[in-house]
Image 1 (cartoon, each protein chain N blue to C red):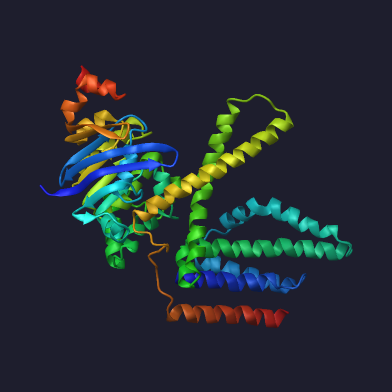
Image 2: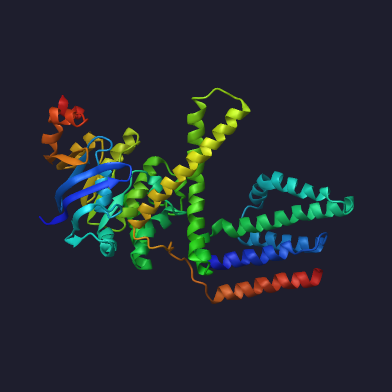
Length: 220
Length: 241
């Protein structure tokens, strides 16, 4: 299966899961069954996947609890809150299945996503970790030289750290650009594409879309 | 031997610092392993960046007989590799495979050729099986080797190293030196690691204040205590005993 196909499978599922009406538990269950079948077919460890969605659970709980801020009534709010939680779990589980074995940028390239977008996301993914290291380094350097804990001081410190990060970011981007140009970079990030988007990919996409559509038509 | 790098009257200024390079004249022949040494700010890295065409100084530079100008940069960079000081700058793609294949893809190598070359070069640098590892999961020594792989895969005739042993532990340093020694291409190294220079290079160019103050046999220059002291350097311990 090509990486582009995997991205399309993900999008079809997400659109379908997000559009499920609140409280339509038949549709929730049928989407969940698709996930279970895929997990068994791909011989993945289901509980390992569940463990991973638990990591993001606190954030989504806060988000779903926000449904209670409206005046719609307790029962309706509860339904909306539950549906956020279920949809989140469905989308994340499907994402974990699809993205467990994917070269996402190659997939985006296959889908003809603009090159500039791919270049930016590639570099962003890589430099999140470098940015994290830089911040830790600065905080450590500041920490060993400062003992004051007043809020005003901390705010001033945060300001100076962010300005230093901006300058460091600029310098680093220049250096990275240099390393790219010496290796022939001409404005386009190229990838060695994996499997091509072929006949079987089209068949698979049609079948998957048909299954999702039928489920929605039956249980809507 | 053929001249591969020919520099005549090269000068370079940064906006905030005058004369970082001051009328440099230099020739490097094929097969020479040359070290650029000198105190911080002597102009070593600036000179190397001029050789690869990243900085654009005033003067004349010819690489493999090709005049350095914008239109020729691609050809020059195809034949000269540059391993930067910090591997984090050089490894910017999602996986090691993507990083190593970045250069060959830009220079138009075929898919089969790239796959074969990447596998081969990762084996050479001792990173076999690291194809789909993420660069930020590697140790500094592994990152340095991966950075070298990104250049080696292009099979350049000359490889420039900027501080290849910087911040490495003794074991990692030894590995990198052994590895650089095994590379067949002409090597140009800018470094403060004089023991490494003794081990790898047959010619040393000592720079100070943007000028070349000495150019010659490695042992002769590194053993010259007065010259080394005057330029802010030290005679390596293996020669001072």
